[in-house]
Image 1 (cartoon, one colour):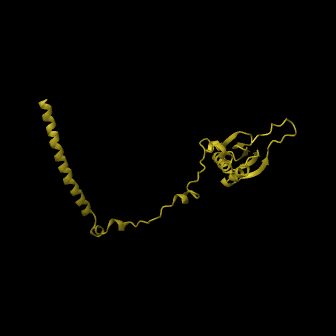
Image 2: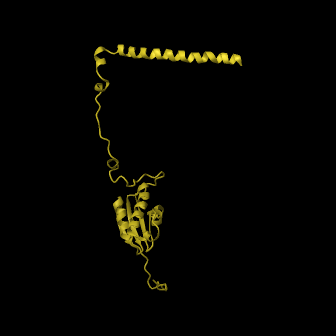
Image 3: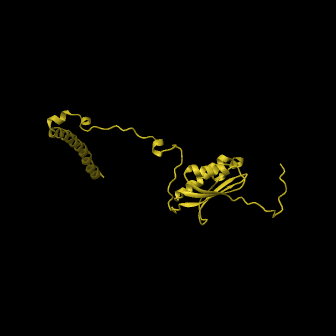
Length: 195
C-alpha cells in the first residue's frame, strides 16, 4: 500500500507542472500571431474587415403566407396521388359527416363533428359543419386531391357551410348534387314526434 501511495504522489506533482507549461505556451502563441500580421492590418478592427448586412427576420405570418394559427396541408406518407374525387356530405339534424372518396368509392379522408371536438347540440351547427369539411379536405389534399364532385344528403343546417368550406380551402368543385332519399309512398311513416 505504501508503494501505491508513492506512485500516485508524482502524478499529482506532474499536473501543476503541465498547467504551468501550457500557461507559458498560450501567451507565446498570441504574440507569434501578432508578429505574423503586417503592421497596417494590425491597426484595423476585426469588424471593419468584413461588412455585415443586417436583414430583418421574416415573421411567422409572412413565412406561412396566411394566418399563423391556420393548419397547413402536409403531404401524406403514402400519398395516393388522386386528383379528382367525390365529397359526400351527410347533414342530419344532430350531426354532420363528410367523407371524401376517389371516383371508384375508395375512402381517402373523412371527418365528423364529434371527431373535430364538438359535443351535444353543438355538433349540429353550421360552424361544426365548416370545421368538419376543412378537416376532411386537408386529409384528401394530402393525397393530392384537387377537384371534387359534391353529393349532399340530409336536411341538416350544415349543408351549405360544408360546401363553402370545401371551396374556401382550395378544392375545385365540379358539380353539386342533392342525393337526399325521397320516399314515393313506399313505407308507413313513423309516428309523430312528441315535443
